[in-house]
Image (cartoon, rainbow, N blue to C red; front, side):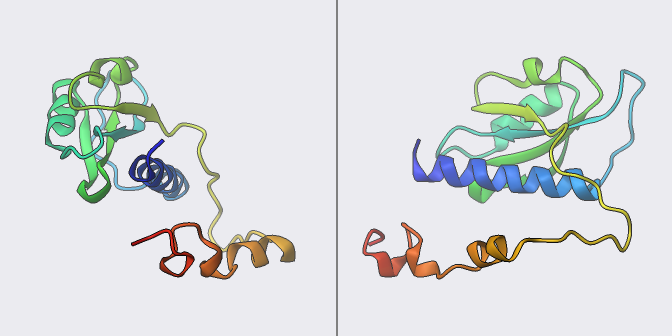
Amino acid sequence: MSHRKTLAAASALTLGIGLAVTGGPAPAASAAGAETTFLVLAPQGAKTDRAAARVAAANGTVVARYDQIGVLVARSTDPAFATAVAGAGVDSVAATTGLGSALDEGETVEVAAADAVTATADPTGEPLSPSSGTCR
């Protein structure tokens, strides 16, 4: 998997978790079913315009657009949305259902000290760090 696709997938997952936790912005819901949030990934190097057109054609709504990484966040009440939006201009589509956990107001999450050290590790150990010599 290319670095761009890996970065886009990781960014999309992080974004999806954030939207699942916060609920994100919500458009008006239709009567077709429960509203579901989807991450739509445009093909590598492509703009998100064709993907956004496919979302609209599949009766979905684009609620966030991240052209730099080729990711759209879309919502739909159509249970067949993922199948309907797939095709030219869309590399992949996935529902965010089950990603993340909602926290109650004021609730905190405890993190083990070992995890905190890993999360704040020295960035020079990153394989794509300019100081690692792999980025030129």
